[in-house]
Amino acid sequence: MKLSPAVSLLVAMFAVTSPAQAGWLDSVFGTDEKKVEKVETTADAQSTDLVGNVMSQLGLSKDQAEGGLGTLLSLAQSNLGDSDFSQLSNSIPGADTLLSAVPALASDDGMSGLLSQAGDLGKSFEGAAMVYDAFEQLGIKKEYVAPMVDIAKSYLETNGTEGTVDLLMKGVNSLL
Image (cartoon, rainbow, N blue to C red; front, side):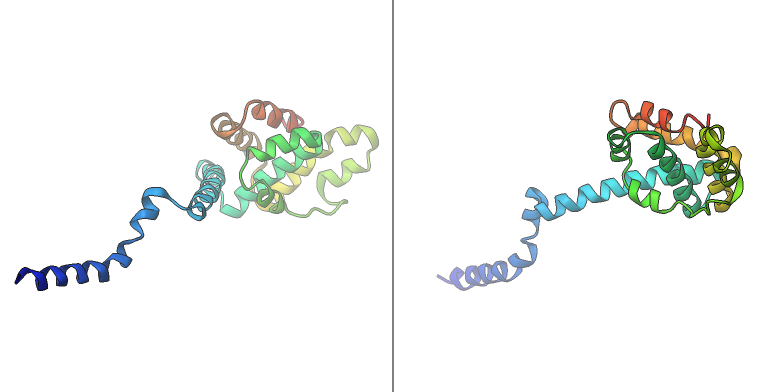
């Protein structure tokens, strides 16, 4: 039985190296932690896709793209009911981040400040003026409003739930 020491040596080597290779079971069956991480990564990638599309198509920085998209979402939020806006924002990963990127505007600044003092007639134009003022503060040309809406619309056509494109258009209709 001269093979016995050799077999023992092979078994011992396998036992020593097996724990280092035990991770292959996780890759086959997956773990809940990795699945959660993958879902979060997918949501981040989708949000990055939307922001990235705005950046590449309009030549804007990340801050400008996030602030511009957040401004559009802010306008939609003020024009839609809670339920409709919730449905819209749930279709845009990172919507809260985009909304937090909206620049703060003083109530008496720019065109929106003037319109806020014009009574009911001014109120109807105030939302659009707020968007233009925010775009100006972000260093975005006001001519980019419609293309940015189109990019968001295209994103929702591909990634949104049914009806979210209509909600977006209803929310930003004062711009178009």
